[in-house]
Image (cartoon, rainbow, N blue to C red; front, side, top):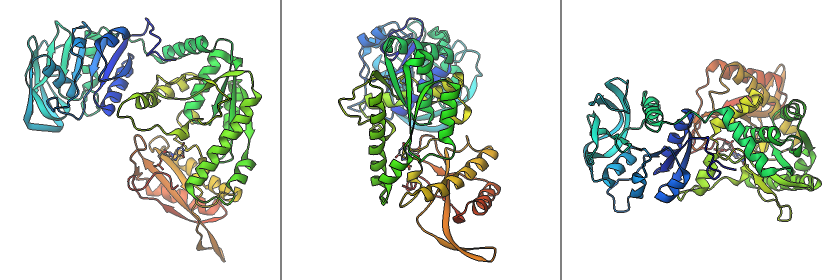
Length: 519
Ligand code: XMP
């Protein structure tokens, strides 16, 4: 189910043409924050396909290339004749100029970072009611040196004579700077002027509307068939399950494979939330013994992942076979996965997040209720549906769980030691108000012991590695500058309260060259 295919007349849609994935995603999110549905489309989209999608506006994103490079990305010029308003941003601005007969050239004053913008036309639509002078964020080597016929230059910066141009008669607009980034403080208002004044977009993309649409789409797809959802305790599968439950109630059965590698109390929380609060048919498979048996003697990180992945599929398969009349399987695919797997420069999607690898004779049709949503929208929907904060705002947690944080052999005893320490970390990080500030915070149990002294006794026990990182997307990360007092409290509580640990060390490595997890 996707709004991309099921054209729905009551949701206004803006297309974001992708000339650089990072830029396009951020623009698409900003548009949605203005309550207008946005869809990212590839740069080679043709005018006929654009017309088919009936957008009320089109935004050409920024990108790293130069418009007069030989293999520069182009746009089908017929798109500009459809009568649909267009806003070009950075590369999109230059492309608009170059396509319509203006001129783009290497700039003498390449601008990177903050620049002071002066609005030169009091009638400029994009800057309506905004100050004449304002800081904007720039990143360009080329610049528009002559606007196309019918356009007016409406703003300048020291490095760009045409920092913005407009042709209201044709509904075409361009800005050299990036209105979508936080460093352009009035950028959101500029975007909203385009959306609301130029495109006359209605604020139809609200959380309630998202839920309503999803529910309609799920009902239309599933009819009165049975449907299965694998729950992991994470935000995506939880929100997906909650929304499917809202849509088709009793037709849904959730399977929660408890591999015994969760944090303390997480299994109980899944029970509490889904069975007791949401009244979901929940199959809670307590498979700890089976996983631990399979993990006995395994020390290589990739072997561990493989062992866990295979066991998981097998357990899930067994349970799914018992629900022999189910036809559909819920998958928590998000919009960035959809874009990435569809785009030409796509990075591979991580397969370990999904329940892939089910045997062919166990074929399900997929229901993907989140495939139009960004992560922040998934969280908002989760809150709206009444899921608890601990689930909605849970930090990312690896599928193989604590097994990748117990270095060396994974045993029940070592898992319990780590779980006890991990609970203290979670409690103290939360108490200090840092849980949502850091990207992830957790403990790692290495396979070494060191000497300590407690009371009159010499101890020989594990150290605990404390890891807390800041990050936007897990691709890069930095160690979190936790206050000394928090480090001190965690250290003294862990050493005093957790038998088996006599030392705490803080990991101060960034990614790259390290990774977030230890295995
Ligand atoms: P690394 O350690 O590669 O982790 O910097 C990046 C992000 O991915 C998570 N991670 C995993 N998630 N299965 C998962 O579902 C895995 O095997 C796995 N390994 C790492 C990690 O927690 C971090 O958020």
